[in-house]
Amino acid sequence: MEKYKVGILGATGTVGQRFVTLLENHPWFEIKVLAASKNSAGKTYGEAVKNRWILSAEVPQKYENMIVMDIEEDARKIVSEVDFVFCALGGEKDKIKKLEEMYAKLECPVISNNSANRMTPDVPMIIPEINAEHAKVIEYQRKRLGTKRGFIAVKSNCSIQCYVPALHPLLDLGIKNILVCTYQAISGAGKTFDTWPEMKDNIIPYISGEEEKSEVEPLKIWGSLEDGEIELNSDINITSQCIRVPVSEGHTAAVFVDFERKASCDEIIEKMTNFKGHEMSRDLPSSPNRFITYFEESDRPQIKTERNLERGMGISVGRLRKDTQYDIKFVCMSHNTVRGAAGGAVLLAEMLCREGYINK
Ligand code: NAP
Image (cartoon, rainbow, N blue to C red; front, side):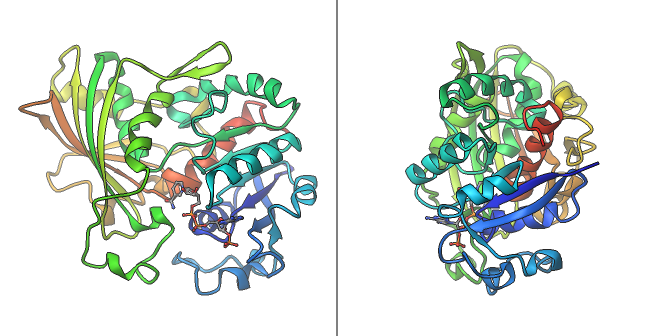
């Protein structure tokens, strides 16, 4: 099979590095372009990530000598060499929103990790197992942009990608109120313990913008397509606190939930573990065999034992029990730069390719 030609915008950062390693031997996708800011453009990829490579695996040899392109000045050249791009850019949101739209208008599909377009009503924000059908909004977005091929699709914030999957199979119980506290790894800020030594033996009780995203993004994921836009779910209330903890990779969440209809803990666990995911998300190269795994042991899920479950694409849940103020409470965890970032975006791109939204 001829592979899709892929570019990575922001290839030098934390998430960009994950894309590079995840796609090294991908059966459908072949990286043709690595691009970043002017600081990295013109260097080989090996030079550009020297002293900032965060992964335990080495820089893949086949990309080491690839010349990094400039996401702005080389945009036309980039789109002529690829079938679509992944966006892993950091930086100012207004600028990224314009850049992503520029690529889409150059007829290049953009699959983005960035938050700049997440709340744009005709941009689908997709966790493929949950709301793959939101891809239908792409035809309305293309009308607005005046494009035939180009569009933007995004994945959600990394923090919600452990608790929204765990809660989704429970929607038929009528979820009313959710209280969630997240414990987020430093790689979520694009950092390591070397680049952020203050995080050793420390907790920071604030992550800029994260609580707002954690409360509103699930409502778009659970929203519906109305008049060419994704309308937010208005039945569910969410409140959150997001805390940075001294962990390299893996976000944990402690969740409390109220339902309209009551169910036993065993029934709830069964609903979670039997959930197979949306049919459009199944049997793709990056699909996990098991989406949600429940751990009976009272000291699980733990970061070190569970974060790489299902190649980092699985959701781990444990400690589900009755609560005295809410109906139930539980703890869940997922890998923030795989499921929560690059891996989730690769799965989304695979789904969009198979469904015909992206063509070679
Ligand atoms: P990062 O490590 O800071 O990397 C940022 C990348 O963007 C680098 O390639 C950088 O290029 C490029 N860049 C930064 N400012 C730019 C500018 N003004 N113009 C052009 N290129 C620019 O960030 P990250 O942690 O990988 O995150 C990337 C995006 O994914 C962010 O929007 C983040 O919110 C989102 N995200 C991250 C995670 C996570 O777990 N880390 C999870 C979900 C979503 P140079 O190297 O050339 O400067």
